[in-house]
Length: 271
Length: 254
Image (cartoon, rainbow over all chains, first blue to last red; front, side, top):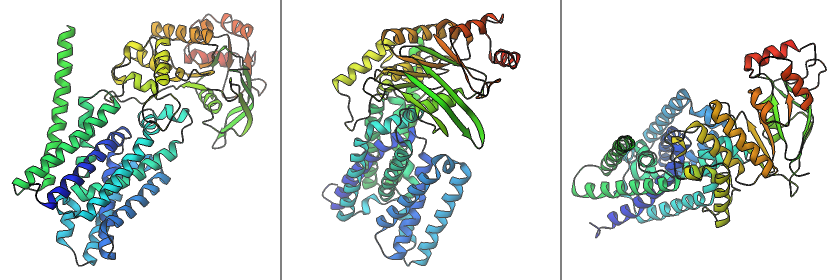
């Protein structure tokens, strides 16, 4: 399997993206931004479609649209944007916009499927370098702002009282998230960003008891999902994204069951 | 002086409505200073303005610290803690440390966290997720976070409101001992007049942001508080009682 360049690229890019998603996903969950992440992926779809129409690199279109959206959401305030109605309107509008751009360009069905459902085995070495650069940038900024972000994500009232620049932290995090979404869309597609961005972090909550452990477990679950998907995708004809989504879903429900069993065990031990 | 709080002619309005109307008072270093008054009187607004979260339209707040700018600890009225959030109590306390770029804690920071948790008798809870703690335990952990940087001033916004009477007493005893042993100036809001009487050295009574009789807020000393409590049979007035007391004295002392 590893004698093929495309599999090497897929493993390298997939693992890095998984580590990034596992890490940022913990903060996405803590800040209740999972639906905004999902919306960003749809906005990214429109951006990539626009890039195809305009004849530029799809990643540039993804980044352009999602970064502008992050600034817009930051300006408007996350609370206003998080309303169900706002999310559904924006999500639908950008999906429609994406379809419009694709219809105006000559690349249609194949490219639509790639953008919506991802194509991890279709990435070339240039894509890998772009993904490596952006992923390391996101992880580096997350490491530098770890304490700031942890405080604001897990104790917003305390962070505001401590005089932290919470508005700037929010905007900064949305910008990071938009970069992460743009990169992830290339691996699992716009419709399945949830799979790496929030499901591993959600599952990790059930296995761990500290923020750092949650980051580690979430990253491992995301990476394991990508590896499982790639291996299964290689040996079968089913899409890689399907296997990644299935693996993460199983991990999530295993986490719920594990927590319930632990609670029951503790009750029995206490009595 | 370290820990001194001076509030002069503070004015705060929201959407044209006056919340604080020329509030003036002074809390002395190492003092337990209570703020009491009915809901909507502007007590929390006053605390947030002192903390710098609200910009006043007029007047000013001066806080004195050991090295000029004081370290202020704050325990808010409520926190949105998700029961499933896996942040451990020790980790939560460490959030209150000065934010640095290095992601991990230094040995001295670990000592600060340990000291704050020892002071609040929560060290045994350090590894437990905060969502799994009881209300009283959580409040002590919140207090530990506020104390982790060894503050000169501690601001508490109804931090005992959701606790049972025993837990309230324990919490207030803890705060009092911290206040006296570490010379921390404590400014606390409470609706429990019994606790105020028991633990505060002095108090400020607020009613809708201004004095009923004079248009300026009243700084209550011990003598005034004694008068306040002995003039009524209700030792433990609830919110309703406080409103009644306010109305009773509208044209009198207040």
